[in-house]
Image 1 (cartoon, rainbow, N blue to C red):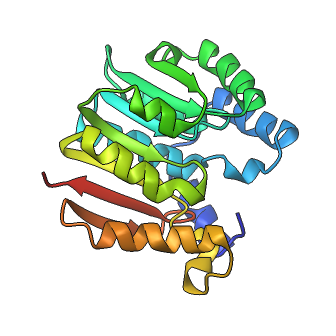
Image 2: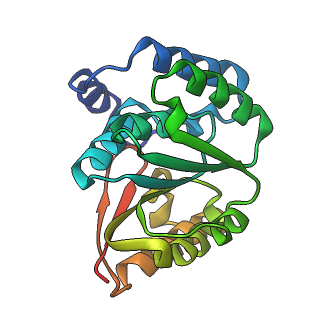
Image 3: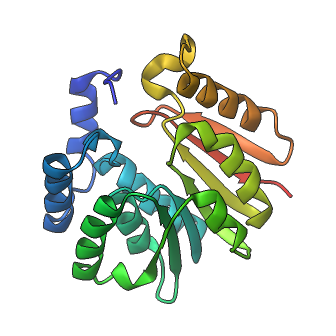
Length: 212
């Protein structure tokens, strides 16, 4: 992810956000050592924001599309009450192996179920109602994920999509991923089924609250 938010301002925000525990620090550091494109990992501010959303919405059943090495899944699982569940989808076995080790260390890891394979196929096997959905997988399928998930989301449930500002490239889209993110944003903005807000948190987050 190319930085397009002032570095000093972002650091100020980090300094005034509840810090990550040792487990998250080690997970982040291992991700940057071992994974290609480690910048795909959710950072502290976004992770804490996701956890806060879980708590504020009272979510008990969450679907995550795009686990990577598990930072966001663990953060959201922390916000779940006892008995809450998070289903997370991933296709990279190397990322899965790292995530499973850290899930095993966390007292919240047993709330998480990993589903390996294409997320659109996993979605077909699920039944709702889901309380919260976090979309952070391949950008070309964002619109498809949204349309597949929305019927499973309860009325009053929340969809959160990451990377919707795409390092600012939404202003001058050039390649297929740029265009897919722009199309997704337009889709949500024009959808009467939801009420939405596009936030400038990290690489951009779209929140869509289901009206009906």
